Length: 94
Image (cartoon, rainbow, N blue to C red; front, side):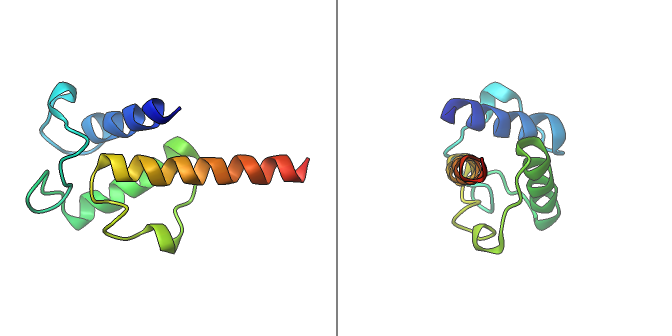
């Protein structure tokens, strides 16, 4: 599942955001801001929206910080945590 999450995030960046990169050129360890991909705040808001829609999650205020959005790997980690939490809540509700 972890590789699937990361792959989906990479697809969002390449296919849905207005960045000029090819899939094979996107390194998941490169910073998303100044010294890396140089994403701005508008693109970051779009990225959050695409992530929430694709994974059917809502990123809480505690996840909306620079540590979460440091690079694609850090985003994938937070999404995996969010998905695991949702699964646990679903199991408890049954």
